[in-house]
Image 1 (cartoon, one colour):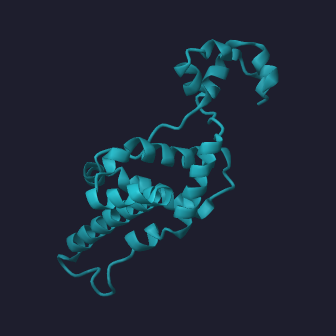
Image 2 (cartoon, rainbow, N blue to C red):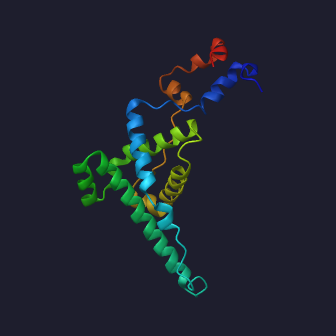
Image 3 (cartoon, helix red, strand yellow):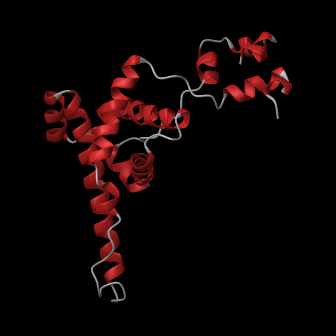
Length: 182
């Protein structure tokens, strides 16, 4: 259906799903994210199958699942540490020593939100690396890993609606001229 045929009330609804454009600072972080995800072999390391011949051995499944969980934690922590180190070597070294990932909670949430927002706006970009990111975020959001990190790495995607709501300017979406402008 045509955009012009939608009532103005739907503009508020549509704004909930329109991501904000990336700022210059966001784009710098995005370039780091693209590089980190390109060299990251998260899915290859974490989702490796159990050794040949052990798949049907009684008692091997719990051991394999425990090793898989260990690899998840190791690889997620390695990626997070690498991201901080790439931005600031001294902070990265301090993070590697302290292992206090929750101190960087807002940065990591913002980091992953930028990548998700970019992918929504550019579905043809980052095809393989975005898949890695989704598996990583899914695993990082498990109860065990979230408890270890001390926070949830997934943040809501910033949208036109969230920006206008924060600024208390949602009435802008009711302007009838907005239909023609969009």
